[in-house]
Amino acid sequence: MRRTVDQQQKLVPIPGAHAHAEEYRQSSAVLDDHPEILELVHGDLIVGGVDPTKGRDGMTAEQVFRAMVVKQTEDFSYEDLAFHIVDSACYQSFCRIGLGSSGPTKKTLQNNIKKVRPETLEAINHIVLEDARRRGIETGRKIRTDCTVEETNIHEPSDSSLLFDVVRVLDRLMRYGREAGFDIEFVDHTQRAKRRAWEIEYAKTAYEREKKYRELVMLANKTLRYAVSAITELDNPTPAVDAFGLILGWGLTTDLEHYIPLGRQVVKQTQRRVFWGEKVPPQDKIVSIFEPHTDIIIKDRRQTLFGHKLCLTTGASGLVLDCMVLDGNPADATLPVQVIGRQKLIYHRPPRQAAFDGGFTARQNLVDLKQLGVKDVMFHKKRSLKIPEMVKSSWVYKRLKRFRAGIEGNISFLKRCFGLSRCTWRSKASFKAYTWASVVSANLLVLARHLIES
Image 1 (tube, rainbow, N blue to C red):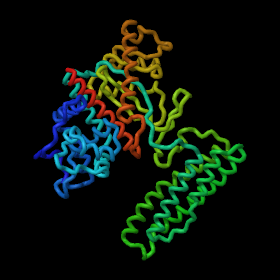
Image 2: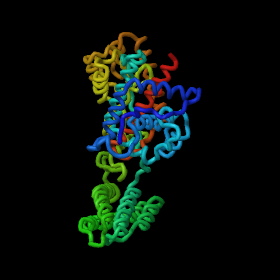
Image 3: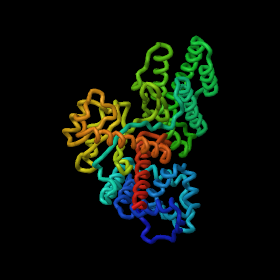
Image 4: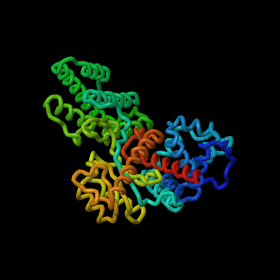
Protein backbone atom coordinates (compact mmCIF):
# COMPACT_ATOMS: atom_id res chain seq x y z
CA MET A 1 0.00 0.00 0.00
CA ARG A 2 1.36 3.40 -0.96
CA ARG A 3 0.11 6.47 0.87
CA THR A 4 0.94 10.14 0.51
CA VAL A 5 1.16 10.67 4.28
CA ASP A 6 0.30 8.67 7.41
CA GLN A 7 -3.05 10.01 8.59
CA GLN A 8 -2.52 8.52 12.04
CA GLN A 9 0.93 9.70 12.95
CA LYS A 10 3.07 7.39 15.06
CA LEU A 11 4.92 8.79 18.03
CA VAL A 12 8.04 10.50 16.75
CA PRO A 13 11.04 11.65 18.79
CA ILE A 14 11.50 15.32 19.58
CA PRO A 15 14.82 16.71 18.30
CA GLY A 16 17.03 18.55 20.73
CA ALA A 17 17.61 22.28 20.96
CA HIS A 18 20.38 22.58 18.39
CA ALA A 19 20.85 25.06 15.54
CA HIS A 20 20.90 22.27 12.94
CA ALA A 21 17.74 20.73 14.40
CA GLU A 22 16.05 24.12 14.19
CA GLU A 23 16.93 24.32 10.49
CA TYR A 24 15.19 21.00 9.92
CA ARG A 25 12.19 22.18 11.94
CA GLN A 26 11.83 25.26 9.75
CA SER A 27 12.26 23.20 6.56
CA SER A 28 9.61 20.80 7.84
CA ALA A 29 7.22 23.67 8.46
CA VAL A 30 7.71 24.89 4.88
CA LEU A 31 6.95 21.42 3.51
CA ASP A 32 3.87 21.10 5.74
CA ASP A 33 2.54 24.33 4.18
CA HIS A 34 2.64 22.74 0.71
CA PRO A 35 0.89 19.33 0.56
CA GLU A 36 0.97 19.61 -3.25
CA ILE A 37 4.66 18.68 -3.06
CA LEU A 38 3.73 15.27 -1.66
CA GLU A 39 1.11 14.76 -4.35
CA LEU A 40 3.78 15.29 -7.00
CA VAL A 41 6.11 12.78 -5.34
CA HIS A 42 3.27 10.30 -4.79
CA GLY A 43 2.49 10.41 -8.50
CA ASP A 44 6.04 9.27 -9.31
CA LEU A 45 5.98 6.49 -6.71
CA ILE A 46 2.83 4.85 -8.13
CA VAL A 47 3.78 5.23 -11.80
CA GLY A 48 3.38 2.14 -13.95
CA GLY A 49 -0.20 1.31 -13.10
CA VAL A 50 0.51 0.23 -9.51
CA ASP A 51 -2.61 0.28 -7.34
CA PRO A 52 -1.58 2.31 -4.25
CA THR A 53 -4.40 0.77 -2.16
CA LYS A 54 -3.03 -2.78 -2.42
CA GLY A 55 0.01 -4.60 -1.17
CA ARG A 56 2.12 -4.17 1.94
CA ASP A 57 2.74 -0.75 3.38
CA GLY A 58 5.66 1.04 1.78
CA MET A 59 7.34 4.34 2.52
CA THR A 60 4.92 7.23 2.22
CA ALA A 61 5.58 9.98 -0.32
CA GLU A 62 6.34 12.27 2.62
CA GLN A 63 8.98 9.91 4.02
CA VAL A 64 10.60 9.39 0.60
CA PHE A 65 10.93 13.09 -0.17
CA ARG A 66 12.14 14.04 3.30
CA ALA A 67 14.68 11.19 3.28
CA MET A 68 15.95 12.53 -0.06
CA VAL A 69 16.38 15.98 1.47
CA VAL A 70 18.36 14.55 4.40
CA LYS A 71 20.55 12.51 2.04
CA GLN A 72 21.49 15.48 -0.12
CA THR A 73 21.79 17.95 2.76
CA GLU A 74 24.18 15.72 4.69
CA ASP A 75 25.77 14.17 1.56
CA PHE A 76 25.07 10.67 2.91
CA SER A 77 25.41 7.40 1.07
CA TYR A 78 22.29 5.22 1.19
CA GLU A 79 23.92 3.04 3.84
CA ASP A 80 24.74 6.07 5.99
CA LEU A 81 21.25 7.45 5.43
CA ALA A 82 19.61 4.21 6.60
CA PHE A 83 21.72 4.25 9.78
CA HIS A 84 21.28 7.91 10.69
CA ILE A 85 17.51 7.88 10.13
CA VAL A 86 17.07 5.28 12.86
CA ASP A 87 19.89 6.63 15.03
CA SER A 88 19.08 10.35 15.05
CA ALA A 89 16.05 11.85 16.78
CA CYS A 90 16.36 14.89 14.51
CA TYR A 91 16.24 12.88 11.28
CA GLN A 92 13.48 10.59 12.60
CA SER A 93 11.36 13.60 13.42
CA PHE A 94 11.99 15.27 10.08
CA CYS A 95 11.35 12.09 8.06
CA ARG A 96 8.27 11.21 10.17
CA ILE A 97 9.67 7.83 11.22
CA GLY A 98 7.84 6.57 14.33
CA LEU A 99 9.43 5.45 17.59
CA GLY A 100 10.19 1.75 17.63
CA SER A 101 10.27 1.57 13.83
CA SER A 102 13.10 -0.45 12.33
CA GLY A 103 13.40 2.19 9.63
CA PRO A 104 13.85 1.66 5.89
CA THR A 105 16.82 -0.30 4.60
CA LYS A 106 19.36 1.21 2.24
CA LYS A 107 17.83 -0.78 -0.65
CA THR A 108 14.33 0.50 0.16
CA LEU A 109 15.61 4.06 0.33
CA GLN A 110 17.41 3.73 -2.99
CA ASN A 111 14.48 2.11 -4.80
CA ASN A 112 12.07 4.80 -3.63
CA ILE A 113 14.24 7.91 -3.93
CA LYS A 114 15.34 6.98 -7.46
CA LYS A 115 11.70 6.91 -8.59
CA VAL A 116 11.34 10.68 -8.17
CA ARG A 117 11.77 12.27 -11.60
CA PRO A 118 13.83 15.41 -12.31
CA GLU A 119 10.72 17.15 -13.72
CA THR A 120 8.98 16.57 -10.39
CA LEU A 121 11.90 18.03 -8.43
CA GLU A 122 12.04 21.06 -10.72
CA ALA A 123 8.31 21.64 -10.11
CA ILE A 124 8.94 21.32 -6.34
CA ASN A 125 11.68 23.93 -6.60
CA HIS A 126 9.20 26.32 -8.20
CA ILE A 127 6.86 25.77 -5.24
CA VAL A 128 9.69 26.55 -2.81
CA LEU A 129 10.55 29.72 -4.77
CA GLU A 130 6.91 30.81 -4.72
CA ASP A 131 6.90 30.32 -0.94
CA ALA A 132 10.03 32.48 -0.68
CA ARG A 133 8.40 35.14 -2.89
CA ARG A 134 5.26 35.16 -0.74
CA ARG A 135 7.36 35.63 2.39
CA GLY A 136 9.31 38.48 0.77
CA ILE A 137 12.62 36.59 0.92
CA GLU A 138 13.24 36.29 -2.84
CA THR A 139 11.42 38.27 -5.52
CA GLY A 140 13.53 37.31 -8.54
CA ARG A 141 14.05 40.95 -9.51
CA LYS A 142 17.84 40.72 -9.29
CA ILE A 143 19.62 37.62 -10.61
CA ARG A 144 23.13 36.40 -11.32
CA THR A 145 24.14 33.55 -13.64
CA ASP A 146 27.24 31.45 -14.11
CA CYS A 147 28.15 28.00 -15.42
CA THR A 148 29.95 25.13 -13.73
CA VAL A 149 30.58 21.43 -14.36
CA GLU A 150 29.17 18.49 -12.41
CA GLU A 151 31.19 15.35 -13.00
CA THR A 152 29.75 11.91 -13.60
CA ASN A 153 30.97 9.02 -11.45
CA ILE A 154 33.57 7.56 -13.85
CA HIS A 155 37.28 6.86 -13.74
CA GLU A 156 39.76 8.96 -15.71
CA PRO A 157 39.18 7.75 -19.29
CA SER A 158 41.83 6.45 -21.66
CA ASP A 159 41.58 4.26 -24.74
CA SER A 160 43.31 1.37 -22.97
CA SER A 161 41.10 1.53 -19.86
CA LEU A 162 37.94 1.74 -21.98
CA LEU A 163 38.98 -1.30 -24.04
CA PHE A 164 39.66 -3.20 -20.83
CA ASP A 165 36.21 -2.18 -19.50
CA VAL A 166 34.62 -3.59 -22.65
CA VAL A 167 36.41 -6.92 -22.33
CA ARG A 168 35.82 -7.45 -18.61
CA VAL A 169 32.14 -6.43 -18.64
CA LEU A 170 31.23 -8.60 -21.64
CA ASP A 171 33.21 -11.55 -20.25
CA ARG A 172 31.45 -11.18 -16.92
CA LEU A 173 28.00 -11.17 -18.51
CA MET A 174 28.79 -14.24 -20.62
CA ARG A 175 30.18 -16.02 -17.55
CA TYR A 176 26.88 -15.38 -15.73
CA GLY A 177 25.04 -16.91 -18.67
CA ARG A 178 27.24 -20.00 -18.70
CA GLU A 179 26.77 -20.47 -14.93
CA ALA A 180 22.99 -20.26 -15.45
CA GLY A 181 23.12 -23.25 -17.80
CA PHE A 182 23.33 -21.60 -21.23
CA ASP A 183 25.71 -23.19 -23.73
CA ILE A 184 27.82 -20.08 -24.33
CA GLU A 185 31.18 -20.64 -25.99
CA PHE A 186 33.78 -17.96 -25.25
CA VAL A 187 37.33 -17.48 -24.01
CA ASP A 188 37.74 -15.16 -21.02
CA HIS A 189 40.35 -12.58 -22.00
CA THR A 190 39.94 -10.39 -18.90
CA GLN A 191 43.34 -11.04 -17.33
CA ARG A 192 45.18 -10.79 -20.63
CA ALA A 193 43.43 -7.51 -21.46
CA LYS A 194 44.28 -6.16 -18.01
CA ARG A 195 47.98 -6.89 -18.56
CA ARG A 196 47.94 -5.22 -21.97
CA ALA A 197 46.24 -2.14 -20.50
CA TRP A 198 48.93 -1.81 -17.81
CA GLU A 199 51.70 -2.34 -20.36
CA ILE A 200 50.25 0.46 -22.49
CA GLU A 201 50.17 2.72 -19.43
CA TYR A 202 53.88 2.17 -18.75
CA ALA A 203 55.17 1.73 -22.33
CA LYS A 204 58.45 3.57 -22.90
CA THR A 205 58.17 4.11 -26.67
CA ALA A 206 55.35 4.93 -29.09
CA TYR A 207 56.18 1.78 -31.11
CA GLU A 208 55.82 -0.45 -28.05
CA ARG A 209 52.58 1.29 -27.05
CA GLU A 210 51.03 0.84 -30.50
CA LYS A 211 51.99 -2.83 -30.52
CA LYS A 212 50.22 -3.41 -27.22
CA TYR A 213 47.22 -1.42 -28.43
CA ARG A 214 46.87 -3.70 -31.47
CA GLU A 215 46.76 -6.75 -29.23
CA LEU A 216 44.23 -5.11 -26.87
CA VAL A 217 41.99 -4.11 -29.79
CA MET A 218 42.22 -7.68 -31.08
CA LEU A 219 41.08 -9.02 -27.68
CA ALA A 220 38.19 -6.54 -27.62
CA ASN A 221 37.06 -7.55 -31.12
CA LYS A 222 37.19 -11.24 -30.20
CA THR A 223 35.14 -10.60 -27.07
CA LEU A 224 32.58 -8.62 -29.06
CA ARG A 225 32.18 -11.52 -31.49
CA TYR A 226 31.70 -13.92 -28.58
CA ALA A 227 29.06 -11.58 -27.14
CA VAL A 228 27.12 -11.46 -30.42
CA SER A 229 27.10 -15.27 -30.52
CA ALA A 230 26.02 -15.38 -26.87
CA ILE A 231 22.88 -13.38 -27.66
CA THR A 232 21.80 -16.08 -30.11
CA GLU A 233 22.24 -18.75 -27.43
CA LEU A 234 20.39 -16.69 -24.82
CA ASP A 235 17.48 -16.28 -27.24
CA ASN A 236 17.37 -20.05 -27.88
CA PRO A 237 18.13 -21.74 -24.54
CA THR A 238 18.58 -25.49 -24.11
CA PRO A 239 15.82 -27.44 -22.32
CA ALA A 240 18.06 -27.73 -19.25
CA VAL A 241 17.67 -24.02 -18.46
CA ASP A 242 15.06 -23.50 -15.73
CA ALA A 243 12.61 -20.62 -15.30
CA PHE A 244 15.10 -18.58 -13.25
CA GLY A 245 17.67 -19.03 -16.01
CA LEU A 246 15.20 -17.77 -18.61
CA ILE A 247 14.61 -14.59 -16.58
CA LEU A 248 18.35 -14.14 -16.10
CA GLY A 249 18.94 -14.76 -19.81
CA TRP A 250 16.50 -12.03 -20.76
CA GLY A 251 18.34 -9.57 -18.54
CA LEU A 252 21.73 -10.64 -19.90
CA THR A 253 20.49 -10.20 -23.47
CA THR A 254 19.40 -6.66 -22.66
CA ASP A 255 22.78 -5.87 -21.10
CA LEU A 256 24.75 -7.38 -23.97
CA GLU A 257 22.69 -5.45 -26.54
CA HIS A 258 23.47 -2.30 -24.56
CA TYR A 259 27.23 -2.82 -24.23
CA ILE A 260 28.06 -4.28 -27.66
CA PRO A 261 27.43 -1.02 -29.64
CA LEU A 262 29.35 0.93 -26.98
CA GLY A 263 32.24 -1.54 -27.26
CA ARG A 264 32.33 -1.15 -31.03
CA GLN A 265 32.41 2.61 -30.64
CA VAL A 266 35.35 2.35 -28.21
CA VAL A 267 37.26 0.14 -30.67
CA LYS A 268 36.53 2.54 -33.54
CA GLN A 269 37.69 5.65 -31.70
CA THR A 270 40.85 3.86 -30.56
CA GLN A 271 41.67 2.87 -34.13
CA ARG A 272 41.08 6.41 -35.37
CA ARG A 273 43.28 8.00 -32.73
CA VAL A 274 46.07 5.45 -32.22
CA PHE A 275 46.40 3.73 -35.59
CA TRP A 276 45.19 6.33 -38.09
CA GLY A 277 46.49 9.41 -36.27
CA GLU A 278 43.17 11.27 -36.33
CA LYS A 279 42.12 13.85 -33.77
CA VAL A 280 38.70 12.52 -32.74
CA PRO A 281 36.25 15.38 -32.01
CA PRO A 282 34.59 15.33 -28.54
CA GLN A 283 31.12 14.68 -29.96
CA ASP A 284 32.37 11.43 -31.54
CA LYS A 285 34.03 10.17 -28.35
CA ILE A 286 32.68 7.98 -25.60
CA VAL A 287 34.51 8.31 -22.28
CA SER A 288 32.65 5.64 -20.29
CA ILE A 289 30.63 2.56 -21.22
CA PHE A 290 28.80 2.88 -17.90
CA GLU A 291 27.86 6.57 -18.29
CA PRO A 292 27.83 6.99 -22.11
CA HIS A 293 25.94 10.29 -21.80
CA THR A 294 29.02 11.94 -20.24
CA ASP A 295 30.23 15.07 -22.05
CA ILE A 296 33.82 16.28 -22.38
CA ILE A 297 34.04 19.79 -20.93
CA ILE A 298 37.21 21.81 -21.55
CA LYS A 299 37.44 24.86 -19.30
CA ASP A 300 39.44 27.73 -20.76
CA ARG A 301 41.86 25.35 -22.50
CA ARG A 302 43.39 24.51 -19.11
CA GLN A 303 41.29 21.78 -17.54
CA THR A 304 39.30 18.87 -18.94
CA LEU A 305 36.32 17.57 -16.97
CA PHE A 306 33.94 14.72 -17.68
CA GLY A 307 30.29 15.24 -16.82
CA HIS A 308 27.71 17.83 -17.77
CA LYS A 309 27.73 21.59 -17.88
CA LEU A 310 25.29 23.32 -15.53
CA CYS A 311 23.95 26.85 -15.91
CA LEU A 312 22.93 28.12 -12.48
CA THR A 313 20.91 31.23 -11.66
CA THR A 314 20.68 32.54 -8.10
CA GLY A 315 19.05 35.54 -6.47
CA ALA A 316 19.96 38.07 -3.82
CA SER A 317 18.72 35.70 -1.09
CA GLY A 318 21.13 32.94 -2.11
CA LEU A 319 18.32 30.72 -3.37
CA VAL A 320 18.94 28.84 -6.61
CA LEU A 321 16.28 30.17 -8.98
CA ASP A 322 17.05 27.89 -11.90
CA CYS A 323 19.39 25.14 -13.06
CA MET A 324 19.89 23.96 -16.62
CA VAL A 325 21.67 20.67 -17.33
CA LEU A 326 23.14 21.30 -20.77
CA ASP A 327 24.00 18.88 -23.55
CA GLY A 328 27.56 19.12 -24.79
CA ASN A 329 29.67 22.19 -24.10
CA PRO A 330 27.78 25.16 -25.57
CA ALA A 331 29.43 28.57 -25.33
CA ASP A 332 28.23 30.70 -22.43
CA ALA A 333 27.37 33.45 -24.91
CA THR A 334 24.54 31.30 -26.32
CA LEU A 335 22.70 31.06 -22.99
CA PRO A 336 21.56 34.48 -21.63
CA VAL A 337 18.32 34.69 -23.66
CA GLN A 338 17.36 31.19 -22.52
CA VAL A 339 18.16 32.09 -18.91
CA ILE A 340 15.89 35.14 -18.94
CA GLY A 341 13.18 33.23 -20.79
CA ARG A 342 13.10 30.62 -18.05
CA GLN A 343 12.96 33.35 -15.40
CA LYS A 344 9.90 34.79 -17.11
CA LEU A 345 8.24 31.37 -16.89
CA ILE A 346 9.02 31.10 -13.17
CA TYR A 347 8.10 34.64 -12.07
CA HIS A 348 5.82 35.62 -14.99
CA ARG A 349 7.99 38.68 -15.63
CA PRO A 350 11.63 39.35 -16.47
CA PRO A 351 14.11 40.33 -13.75
CA ARG A 352 14.90 44.01 -13.43
CA GLN A 353 18.66 43.45 -13.12
CA ALA A 354 20.81 40.57 -14.39
CA ALA A 355 24.52 39.98 -13.80
CA PHE A 356 26.52 37.57 -15.95
CA ASP A 357 30.06 36.22 -16.03
CA GLY A 358 32.42 37.50 -18.72
CA GLY A 359 31.89 34.48 -20.97
CA PHE A 360 28.27 35.55 -21.58
CA THR A 361 29.32 38.88 -23.08
CA ALA A 362 27.99 39.63 -26.57
CA ARG A 363 26.41 42.73 -28.05
CA GLN A 364 23.51 40.73 -29.47
CA ASN A 365 22.83 39.29 -26.02
CA LEU A 366 22.63 42.81 -24.62
CA VAL A 367 20.16 43.84 -27.31
CA ASP A 368 18.02 40.74 -26.84
CA LEU A 369 17.92 41.02 -23.04
CA LYS A 370 16.92 44.67 -23.20
CA GLN A 371 14.11 43.73 -25.58
CA LEU A 372 12.96 41.05 -23.12
CA GLY A 373 12.51 43.75 -20.48
CA VAL A 374 15.70 43.57 -18.40
CA LYS A 375 16.56 47.14 -17.34
CA ASP A 376 20.17 46.64 -16.22
CA VAL A 377 22.42 43.99 -17.78
CA MET A 378 25.93 43.58 -16.36
CA PHE A 379 28.59 41.49 -18.08
CA HIS A 380 31.70 40.93 -15.95
CA LYS A 381 33.89 41.63 -19.00
CA LYS A 382 32.78 44.66 -21.01
CA ARG A 383 34.84 43.93 -24.13
CA SER A 384 33.44 46.31 -26.77
CA LEU A 385 30.39 47.28 -24.70
CA LYS A 386 30.11 50.58 -22.85
CA ILE A 387 28.74 50.91 -19.32
CA PRO A 388 25.91 53.31 -20.32
CA GLU A 389 24.74 50.71 -22.86
CA MET A 390 24.40 48.06 -20.15
CA VAL A 391 23.28 49.95 -17.03
CA LYS A 392 22.19 53.44 -16.12
CA SER A 393 25.34 54.42 -14.18
CA SER A 394 28.84 53.31 -13.22
CA TRP A 395 27.66 52.97 -9.62
CA VAL A 396 25.04 50.40 -10.66
CA TYR A 397 27.61 48.54 -12.76
CA LYS A 398 30.00 48.27 -9.80
CA ARG A 399 27.21 47.10 -7.49
CA LEU A 400 26.09 44.44 -9.94
CA LYS A 401 29.71 43.36 -10.51
CA ARG A 402 30.14 42.77 -6.78
CA PHE A 403 26.74 41.08 -6.66
CA ARG A 404 27.72 38.69 -9.45
CA ALA A 405 30.76 37.52 -7.47
CA GLY A 406 28.37 36.04 -4.90
CA ILE A 407 27.34 33.23 -7.23
CA GLU A 408 30.82 31.73 -6.87
CA GLY A 409 30.02 31.20 -3.20
CA ASN A 410 26.61 29.74 -4.09
CA ILE A 411 28.23 27.21 -6.44
CA SER A 412 30.88 26.33 -3.86
CA PHE A 413 28.13 25.82 -1.26
CA LEU A 414 26.29 23.42 -3.57
CA LYS A 415 29.43 21.45 -4.38
CA ARG A 416 30.86 21.23 -0.87
CA CYS A 417 27.67 20.57 1.08
CA PHE A 418 25.20 19.00 -1.34
CA GLY A 419 27.34 16.73 -3.51
CA LEU A 420 26.97 18.76 -6.69
CA SER A 421 30.64 18.34 -7.57
CA ARG A 422 30.10 14.71 -8.60
CA CYS A 423 26.90 12.80 -9.35
CA THR A 424 26.90 9.27 -7.93
CA TRP A 425 23.68 8.14 -9.66
CA ARG A 426 23.73 6.31 -12.99
CA SER A 427 22.01 7.32 -16.27
CA LYS A 428 21.22 10.75 -17.73
CA ALA A 429 17.76 10.95 -16.12
CA SER A 430 19.21 10.09 -12.73
CA PHE A 431 21.94 12.70 -13.24
CA LYS A 432 19.29 15.37 -13.67
CA ALA A 433 17.30 14.06 -10.70
CA TYR A 434 20.43 14.10 -8.50
CA THR A 435 21.18 17.67 -9.57
CA TRP A 436 17.67 18.91 -8.85
CA ALA A 437 17.58 17.02 -5.53
CA SER A 438 20.71 18.93 -4.49
CA VAL A 439 19.19 22.24 -5.62
CA VAL A 440 15.87 21.67 -3.78
CA SER A 441 17.65 20.54 -0.61
CA ALA A 442 19.93 23.58 -0.68
CA ASN A 443 16.99 25.93 -1.20
CA LEU A 444 15.08 24.42 1.72
CA LEU A 445 18.10 24.94 3.98
CA VAL A 446 18.69 28.52 2.79
CA LEU A 447 14.97 29.33 3.20
CA ALA A 448 14.99 27.80 6.69
CA ARG A 449 17.97 29.98 7.69
CA HIS A 450 16.19 33.10 6.43
CA LEU A 451 13.15 32.17 8.52
CA ILE A 452 15.31 31.64 11.60
CA GLU A 453 16.99 35.03 11.14
CA SER A 454 13.66 36.77 10.74
